[in-house]
Image (cartoon, rainbow, N blue to C red):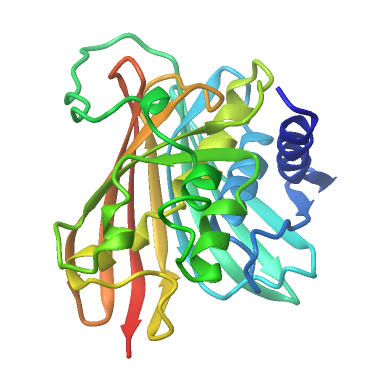
Length: 289
């Protein structure tokens, strides 16, 4: 693994290593992914880490639901205030507020569950090419996609700690209207610590990538288009099974609906062996024109 990869992952881990100020108060810094505002996945991941730090170790996060209220200022620290809603016999519930300049910019509820045995079933992973048969974003944008706008190239290239390999790049070459779905393989570019909290945080970080963009496919639009404006309104993540974010994961995305200037998108995350490990959902503001 190259030194650059280790450095990039190290920077992401440092981003998630938020500072504890008081028992239920934490402070996080922001990293740039090429946007003027804070990347939503970063706020989501830091809020989750803050909640995790207030829960006993034998309980693992199984779901979170967050609302993006205001854009984050990339140059200012973010305070995370955690409220202990309940510690029951099997579940713990936390509420987290992310605060900047005295205002709440994000609010999240998260639930934690002790490990229990139970019935087990899951949908099958889509039949798509494996990551070893695909090119990464940097290879793609030096080839067929080299002529795409620089803003779109930055969108794919700036997530240095995470490698993304899209299954089908034809929508970037052909603006025809198509089904609102896409498949993207991803993983951290270097080995991560054997700590479930780290993997959950990085999964949350990556889960915001390309989710809302999926709703543009039926309209022949790209995120980089000058007349497109997207903003996440909420985000939900369910963790069904143990996951390692440094092993290949397939993000299978679709958008069942777009109406009233809002798009709704869903995602399923599979291990390379076909096991479903997580699900996501997001609604976002979508303005065209």
